[in-house]
Every structure is written in C-alpha cells, then in structure tokens.
Image (cartoon, helix red, strand yellow):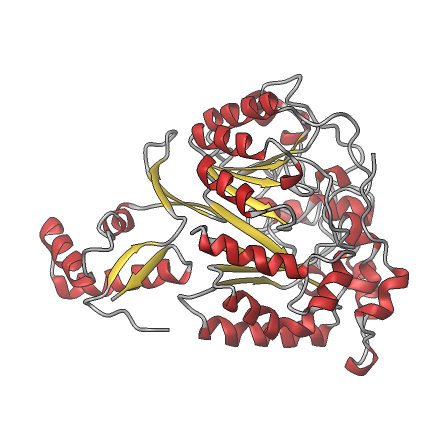
Amino acid sequence: MNYRPYMLLAELTHSCPLHCPYCSNPVEYPRGRELSTEEWHRVFDEASQLGVLHVGFSGGEPLRRADLPALVAAAHAAGLYTNLITSAVGLQPQRAAQLREAGLDSIQISFQSDHETLADQIAGTSAHALKLQTAKLVRELGFPLTVNVVLHRGNIDRLDQIISLAEDLEAERLELANAQYYGWAFQNRAALLPTRSQIARASEVVAARKKQLLGQLDILFVTPDYYSERPKPCMNGWATRFLTVNPVGDVLPCPTASAIKDMRFDNVRTRPLAWIWCQSESFNRFRGTEWMPAPCCECPLREVDFGGCRCQAALITGDANATDPACALSPHRRTLTSFVEAMQEDDAAIRPFTAELGRLSFRQNSN
Amino acid sequence: MMPLHPLSRPALARGVRLRNDPITGEPVLLFPEGVLPLDTATHDIITRCTGEATIETIVLSLAREYDADPGTLRLDVCECLAQLRQRMLVAISK
C-alpha cells in the first residue's frame, strides 16, 4: 500500500457563529493556543513537500481568523488548490475580493435548510438570509460554489426544496451529508436520526433530481451507515490519503479521530509533518490489515471497507480495534439495530424540529 | 441533460485546474472537492478542451495522433466527456 496524503483539512479555529446540534467538532475542545500565521505557513510548505495537492480551510468558522487571506496566499504559493469551507458568516464583499486576490480557488457554503425559520432554528442563530446573499456574491466573483447541507430528521423531508435551493443558487455541487453520529451529533442522535421511511423517500428524490440536473448540479448523497448492512470505507482506509491539522496543531488521520480516547496525537509544533505521516503511532495504528480482529481479519471485504470507521467502533463498542458496529457481521450490530428500531415512527408522529429544541444540545464555543 | 453535440465546445469547468503531480509527474485534475489522477487517454482529451475546439475537432485531432478510426474514437471521447461533465469537471457550451 502506498500511503500518500493528497488532501489536507486545515481546521483554523473551533470558534463558530453557528451552534448546529450535529457539529462534527469535538465536544471537548483541544486545549492550547491556535497556530500562528507563520506556523500554518510552515504546515502548508511541509504538506506540499509531502505530496498534498489540495487544502480545505475549515473550522469552526475559518473566516474568524483575521489572517485568512494571508493563509490562503501561503497555501496558494505552495502550489495547493484552496477551498474555503464556511458558514458564510463574515464573508463580506471586501473580504471575498481579498480572498480571490489571494488565490482562493473555490467556496463551499453550509445551509441548514431551504426554509429560513427552520434553518435559523437548526443553526441556533439568524444566518440563513445572509447565506443567500453571500452565495450570490460568491457567484458574482466567479468562484465555483458547493452547497453543503447536513441532513437529519428535522430537514430531510424538505430535500426536494433543498435541491431547488442549490439549483437556484447556481451551485456546481450539492453535498447532502447525512449527519454522522460522532461528537455533538452522537449526543443528539435520538432527535436527529431520520426514520427508515424518510431515508427511502430521500433516496427517491435524489435519484430523480440527479437525473434531471445531470451536467448542471453534481449531487452527492450517501445513505447513513446506521441503515446499511456494511460499514462505510471510512477515509478510504486509515491514514492513506487525508490528514487533518486542528486549530492547536495536532495532526489527525481523520477529523473526528479525537473520539478515540486512548489515542495521542503528535503536533506540528514539535514534529515535522512528514515524520507524523510516516512514523507516528496514531497514523500507523490502523494502516493495513494486521490490526484487524475477527470478523474483519478473515473477511473478503477487508480491503474494500477497511473494517469501517474506527471512531464509530470506539464510540459504540468502547474498543477502537473492533469491527465497525454498522457492519452486519459485527457482534455489536444489535446495539445499533435496537437504537435504530426504537427511532422508527409513523410519518404522522415525526415531531417538527421546533418540538425537538428542548432535548437538543446546541454546540457552544468554549475556552 | 442536453446531449453532447459534435459542434459544442468543451472547456475545463469553473474552478477546475489541470496540473502535474510533482511526486509522480503524472497529470491530475484539482477541483473543489478533490483530486483526480488522469490516465493518458483522458489527459489527451482534456488538454484539447480549450473552449475553442469543437468535440468533432478534438476527435479528428486524436484520430490523427493515434492513427485511429474517428468513428470509434468519437464514442470514447463522448463517453469520457459525459462522465467529466457529470462530475462538473468539464463545461460544454455551443
């Protein structure tokens, strides 16, 4: 196996103006101070030398870093493709023009729904109207636009309208990301997991609209693994293609790897990125197939799905080495299945998002 | 979706960059959500997607280069362009 990072996710800050209850950021923030402009500059240079071709500026909200144009310019100068992953809050015309100038290649904007009231309830703040305005600005400046919508029980029945929103905004891409149940989303999963009939309807809507919008809007939709028989090939295999650097400089093989409580991460302040990629314990722990227990180690699909998601294994079974409990062959699948079955309700019984507000934990900025 | 017309003119879509991978020396497409390493055939098509050349011009140019039958090549080129358009990597205008 040839391990080479192609893409770097640069989590510039965990601070964010939104409070989405499915936020993928850790529930407990890593402690320490954020990397400086110069430190990020070095990370981009080292990443480029290591083979990285593409960097996603993410967060939290990356626009909260005043030095974002300088960081984009540094990554661009290192030859990297630069993509901004944003809530759109803080992307005023002048800032957007500066980023264009700095060499930013593309922008992804998150939406919580097509419906303003619902969207603002999900985000825990008024942002939808601003997002619409900013998406238009992004188009006017000539950036390619990706719209990202996290799907859950409270918005998945509006999928058709959500797709129309992306179409109206003239986005090139629409990522319909079913909430992944780690971090905040795991805490809130009883209120977020769609029912089986919601997923079935959503799949039909996506299939029809994909066909209609072929060549105009690329729609990506993946069924949540709670409803599948086989686990997702998480990260295309542990530490094979991607790396994440978090706001304080810890380097993670996947953005949610801090869910694995017994894993220690090396830091760009104390180690070269190349050493971390090639030598560190965290990056090597689940590479290849030798680490796999049964049933994975004798499974013909072990190099297709790589045993699924390590974070989900850790979260649900307490053992990061275990087979992903989303797999029907996992001895822990019944834990997931009984949860999923308890979540099923008739369509008429599905409560509107407003009725769920009381039992949701909304993400807060801390430290 | 509009079918591919032989007189339409393909070009790289907005925000898509073609570059050489400094590690392998092989061509790759960079786009908002990822990296796509290109095989020789796809690369030969993409470098001809200038926004000026029509699909028919591209087919004839490749037929000369490969010393191949334009009829067979036309199918392959259209199939390749249709896939690239589906992923919004190539834009096709008349």
